[in-house]
Length: 326
Image (cartoon, rainbow, N blue to C red; front, top):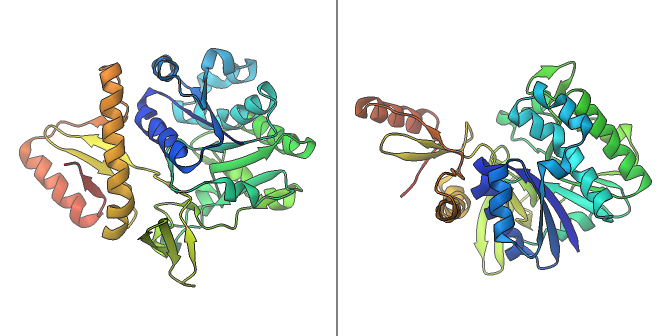
């Protein structure tokens, strides 16, 4: 059985529930441990009572080390700080053979078991950003992405996990300092610092807005395929990381932004628009349970009609980063 863990609060609830939905469609034999980072998300997730999901509250999860540093971290920084602790909690509490951390803004298109099997006899699996050259942020954000990471419940796996957990407790901030950045830059030297660490080779694990320019997405009868443009090699799309996909609410118009990345119309059509449709449907479902929850974590902006038109035109032309909701 595949064991996963993730974390999110009510502002990420629509994305988190779409993630659950995608896992249910991609694989049958799995269990997902969700760390609910506020009371509203815990209440709704508990009410939904998914068969393949265990919901864990902050009260159950947080230990003294986390509580001590919590006041010094922003909400995002605290989530980053907590990531290795969630994996450790699952391995110990539920005595799992291994556990894979997944970001809540992933969407699975095929069974991720192929990624985990690739690590073989190694104890830890990490995934590269594989940045397109023009978007290379390795110097700031690191070579590897904390998006899909597997740790085995072995002596070496726990040693590496504890090293990372302790490092994040000591320092995990949204700034660059002494070669560190958040929880992610710590991974840069793991291939030489530790033994038993495997760097994922399957390109279908980790397609994202910062590297999708290197690929062509095609829709085949047996699912979505990805063609690497440089080598023409083809592989299954296992998951896409919808990083930086934010909802912006204006006075009359809703927009989704996907950041400063260039995304082709074909990729928007095959990946982004279906995903956004699912997000909207899930947000509507969440609101049917609790109308006070904004599961999309929208930012509200009030603009005059003139400024709104100017804003849309400017961003549409200059940054090519708006997806209209219809």
